[in-house]
Length: 158
Image 1 (cartoon, rainbow, N blue to C red):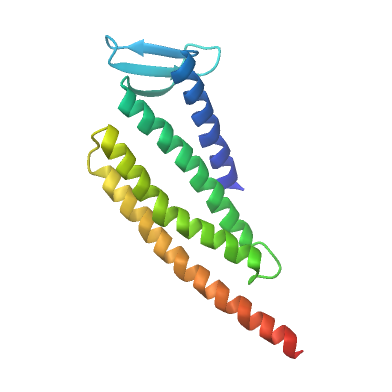
Image 2 (tube, rainbow, N blue to C red):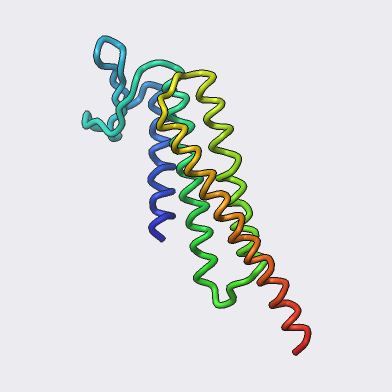
């Protein structure tokens, strides 16, 4: 449940940022045009801050969108463990999407971001951490797949 709330928060932040950066609504340019503030709707209270250049803004939107997706996928994986039957095709599907997302998307996003904006080393650390999470999830999906097959064989014998 917490991860779905985080996913919704990131998605709303993504939408607000996309609207602000494309239309100028709730957007304030500060520091002689070098930085921006995205304010809460209909207020002057800053919500998000960043550099006012196209590379940074594209990276900013990409990361907000990807973390919205990440927390949605985490919520789906956690929902697998709340089912009465643990080893199901539903669980395998969500674990597979989760590990593929963590193995592929961070690397692709890092390459896209590196092409348009110079980023320091924390991006590399995040990519490595997501890939490690993807490898761990891959093994978990393999265990679930094996458990699913064993469970089906057991159900046929009875």
